[in-house]
Image 1 (cartoon, chains in turn green, yellow):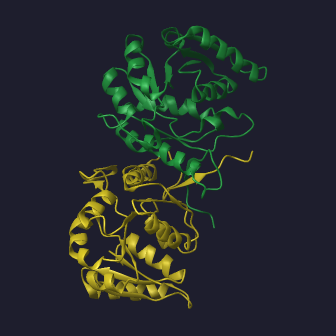
Image 2 (cartoon, helix red, strand yellow):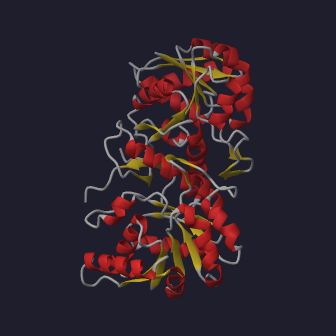
Image 3 (cartoon, one colour):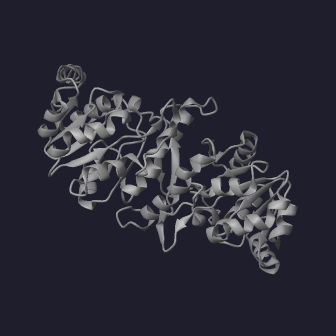
Length: 223
Length: 223
């Protein structure tokens, strides 16, 4: 299995590439500059133990072509729509996994949603219903992802309008030893994406005794 | 200390009344019919051990008057605005704690937000900035609240535009042995309220092995 991570040289993309490669999934990192992607791929590969799957570096379009099916969009939100437009023709028979959070310019404690309601909905509108968009992995800390000595302290809330596509993404994410839940249609991204600035707020707060917070779905207490 | 719970005869209101009274906080339950409120108060009081604070029953306006400061609005969302309008004049020098979730008519797996963006923002607009509105306790399961043999499996995400009011509400909620976090301005309610239908969806799902789910803010994993 080979996935692609666009924006794979950023902190979120690097952490995801490391985690997936360690779990045995080949990763094609895409960046605007193929050389930067190749450099990042080499650096990340050097952090992994023998037995991990390969991480390779490509320009954005080549990375999409390299993916079997799942393409993770991890570019900064400012490049979200333009990146999608530049790869739309390559996404036939693929699934776009959107991890973008539309943080407000200059204030990461707030969300500034696009007119469509959320980044996931905007991506689905831009690509058309023929290409399934799945929102996922919005709330996981990049620092946590890059710290391979520890588990991921965050369940993954997955949404989108195509059930089969969501199930593929949930199966992929569970390979990271993290719980992933189907949280409904793309519209649920209005909530799920907006959890991230709340976590950022708590991370910054002097009253919260930890940072890199995650959220978890909890069954009723046993006691 | 004496708080008021409007809609205190519903499942959420009853559970909160039990939990707060057990924690030593007097509770004035408000209902459209004072007799129903008195009946519920007597039933709830009988469930508590000696040493708990008193639960009393009143009509809505008398319950507001009975509160020292904090008034919890736990009526069904369909009665949200009308109830606020009927008590607005009594809320001077008080704090309105809004726990309402605007679930879509006929589909509790979706939210149908008011034009203001969320119930909390709608309440703040209706009451005017002179009366602080704090959104809280949206995501806690009524079943969990009413099960006094177990703890509460859900952190409380608190939001609102008045910091002092939020701090009072956070202090109150922590008396229930539950974590409560300041999650920013009233606008954050657009996310926090919308978490509830996602939890309801998971509770209904055959793929999730538990119901009455809560959410918790988690520090990075120790291992």
